[in-house]
Image 1 (spheres, rainbow, N blue to C red):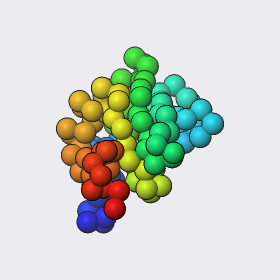
Image 2 (image 1 turned 135 degrees about the vertical axis):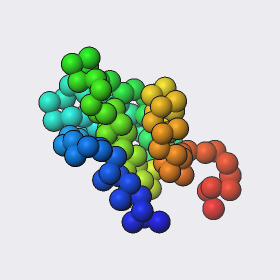
Image 3 (image 1 turned 90 degrees about the vertical axis):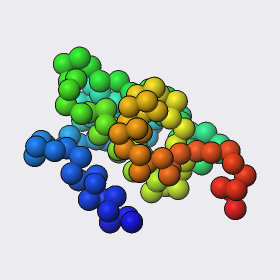
Length: 117
């Protein structure tokens, strides 16, 4: 299962486009491009168990490159590797990224008591 997800992650860019380097800026609570122009802002909730993705921003000069999607993949991958759940507050994450990448729904935060076992 993990292998399959990894393969999907590498083929997302399509057309051999160069995957941008996304940097985790822990002090600013952001995942951002190296030039800091595009970013995904998050808040840590539930005592560090949840990552609330509050905002993604891509400047007009960089639209259409799939940057928002790359930012989401980086943030979701980070959350998953740190055993954090994701709260998709940002409309881009909930309405665009997740419907296009439903495999990430497994990482979403739920207050369902069953998930706390």
